[in-house]
Image 1: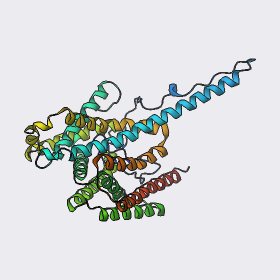
Image 2 (image 1 turned 135 degrees about the vertical axis):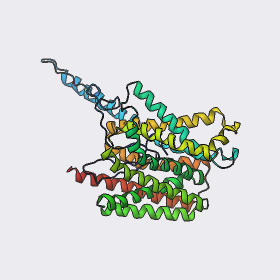
Image 3 (image 1 turned 60 degrees about the vertical axis):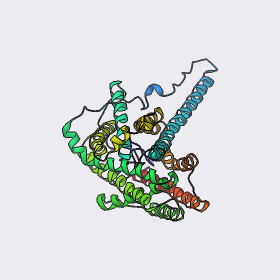
Image 4 (image 1 turned 90 degrees about the horizontal axis):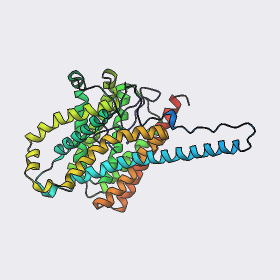
Length: 388
């Protein structure tokens, strides 16, 4: 779950509707992304490619026999530099996506023996505050730009944010009651719900390859849940609730961005400010804040660093996704988002010592392969719509 961004998606974990040749094109969402849509800012962004970043060609000198070799050497250095930038950008994006899920899993389940109940709502508030601090610092440093807080904009954005808050809370709850591999598999169900909603609400069309991918994802997820003894009704409830909230957020965001014009980081700012405004009073009323204050075992550097890291990564995921698209292109970006589910499932299993049978792993693998097939199908459809 990513607080700074639900934007990262298979195209993300913490993906959101983007315009790709057609308004009917929807990309899948990773839990936790918090900002996709149309941007209005015009100033240049430090992560976007600049002309100065392009390799300069060496001019040929008349009568100089080694001019050709110099030009060839320059091109070679430029290609090597570009490959290095692409590798770094891909690693940053993948690392943020994987790190966000693993840290949230640790926060949601590793400290429950110290308290009665849980602190899931308060955890979301902590991370939202951290994300607001990060985005405001970046704005004052001149790295990003978005309008100052406006009460009218906040009112218009509030319905979107309620779904955003639901997405983050249910995501944290699903990580508390389920293993990371199982949560990762059920993320694919969100894609199915989003596509169905896109067809019903916005009249989008679905290709046969996408339907086939959905069948594989759904079959793998259902069989994995049936064979996982660690899955119970409470865990299934929160996973399905998270799928519904995430899908609802994506679908409503597609409509909201037509009436409320916010840049990518403007959405990060409003989502997290409003999230704090809505959820902090809830944490006071249900006693979570009092529980936190009354539990000295939670007042540790380890707990604070994990919350701060999750908030920072949720925000930084925006930078990482922009940089990845700029350096590698949308195709590579989408594939990384889809393939990220594999290391998340593996690391989650190893770090948190989940009890998963070989048969369950087989079904998990089938569902993950269905997710990759879905990404390929969406990319092919996008290329056809754009006339490439």
